[in-house]
Image (cartoon, rainbow, N blue to C red):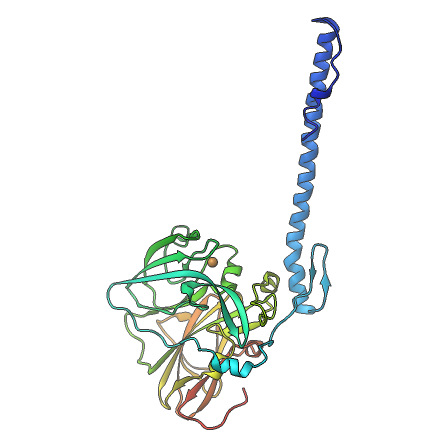
Amino acid sequence: MSSHPATVSTPRPEGGPGGTSAVWKVVVLLLGIAVGVLAIAAVAAVQAADQARDEVGAAAEPVSAASSAVHDHSVHATAGQSLPLQSFAGTTGANADALAKAHTAYDAALPAVPSGDLVKIHMTLKDMVVEIAPGVKYNTWAFDGHGAPGPILHVRQGQTVQMTLTNGGTIPHSIDFHAARIAPNLAFTDVAPGDSFTFRFTADDPGVFMYHCGTKPVLAHIANGMYGALVVDPATPLPKADKEYVLVASEWYLNGDGVQTPASLDMNKARAMMPDWTTFNGYANQYVTHPLTAKPGQTVRFYVVAAGPTLDTNFHIVGTLLDRAWVNGDMTHHQTGVQTVAVPAGGGAVFDTKIDQEGLYPFVSHAFAHVDLGQVGLLKVGSPKGTMSH
Ligand SMILES: [Cu+2]
C-alpha cells in the first residue's frame, strides 16, 4: 500500500491558474487513483493466493499424518511438514516395576450418592504434571487438580446437579455433561482463566455418562486429560452389587517419552489415532500392580466410560462372562452372559460379573493393541496363589 500516495511525489508543472495547469491537475489526480486501485488489487490477489495455499496445506496435513500412521511409521515428508510420528509406546522409567508399585492407584470405587435434591459440585481446573505410566510424566489440564480422569461423580435420577467450574489454568476451558439436556451454548460455555461459571441440570436419565471439556479443539482438551465419569443411579435401583468400580478408558499421545521431561500432546498423533499409551483411569496397567478385589461369589459391577478422545474400548473379563450388560448405559434392560461389549468413545456401559472361583481375572479392552499399550487390569477374587500370563 506504500505506492498509494503516488501523487505526493508527482512533479507539479509551473503555471498560473486554469489552462495547462488545470489539465495537469486532473491528469495527476486520475493517475493517482489508478495507481491506488492497482495497488489494492495486487495486494488482494497476493492475500487470496496465500489463503488458498494455507487451506490446501491444512487439508493435506491430517491426511498425510493418518496415512503415515496406518502404512508407515518411518520418515514421511510432505510439502508443508516433515513427519515421522515417532512412537514412545512402552518406554518407561528405568526402574519401572518399583515405580509401578510406588504409584498410588486411582481409587476406582464408586463413591456414595450425596443426600438431598441438590448436589453441588465445584471443580477447579489446574495445569499439572501427572504420571501416566511408570516414570512417564505428562502435562495435563486437570479437572479439580485431580489428574486424569477427573473425580468420579455419582447422583441419583431426579437429583439436580449444580456444577461450578473455576478455571485455574491459563487458557479457556469448559465442562460438557453427556447426562444433561441443556443448551450447550449456555451451559457448556468457555470459562476464562481466573473466572468461575455455574449452571444446573437435572439428572433425568440414568446411566453412566462421560463429562469432558468442550472447548475447541476438543480433541486436544480431552487428550490432555479433561474427562471423567458421572454415574446416575436409576430411580428403581439395579440389582444389588457387592463391589462397584468405575473405569474410564482413554488414550495418550506424547510428543516425547516423558521420562526426563514431561511430555505434552502430539496433535498429529492424536489425529492419526496413534496413541503411545492407553489406560484405565489414566495410568497404564495400574490395576495389574494394584488389583481391584472381590470375594468369591460376590457380584462385581463395572461402570465403564470410554473417554477417548477417539478410540472405543472393548470390555472383556478373561476367565468369566459379563452376567449382565447394560449396553450403552441403557438401564431399562440388560443383556445376559455376553463375552465382550464395545463401549464407544463418548459412551458408557455397566457390567455385572459374579465369580465363584478364586483367581486373578484380567479385565481388558479386547482390541489387544490396547492391552499392549496399558489398558489392562486385574480383578483379584479371593486370595489366589501364583500369577498369570496376561
Ligand atoms: Cu479444556
